[in-house]
Image (cartoon, rainbow over all chains, first blue to last red; front, top):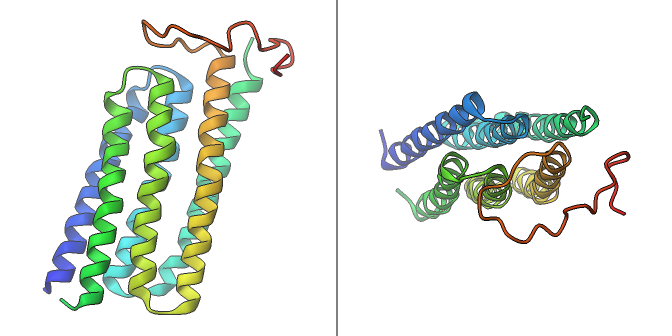
Length: 89
Length: 117
């Protein structure tokens, strides 16, 4: 295992830990916008995980799936914000 | 480890550091508005760092252009999402933390339509 692979695996681990912390906020958030914000953060972490893994295993085909995850994360967050905003009263 | 791999690891480590800061921020900060402040800016910088590192490592113009376009997409959409979440939270009446003194938006939203007067 080369030094590059060790460094990239360590950064995958750090992103995983960071995602677990964001998941804790998703589970315990006091209000619905808290959960929507944690969902947005988790989608960004998924993008970073796929990007680092694609650089680690040298599979550039994985980078196409990043675009789908990014667009789904943004549209999901905006849809949740609109639902929260229209569902008041 | 070649020079290219070293530069890649440095830039990706910077991005990963900012993503970890995002998670610590949304865990530790006291109310929703400060948490969205952390999630809207630091995660944009973090994901930009990670994608720039992967684009440097790919050594292919097509892949690099795709990743740079994705960075542009994140720079556009991430503040928009944070702003819409904050606006929805303010309209639904999420409380700020104790001691938030100047609330410039108090009474300026039309509660029927959700627009600024």
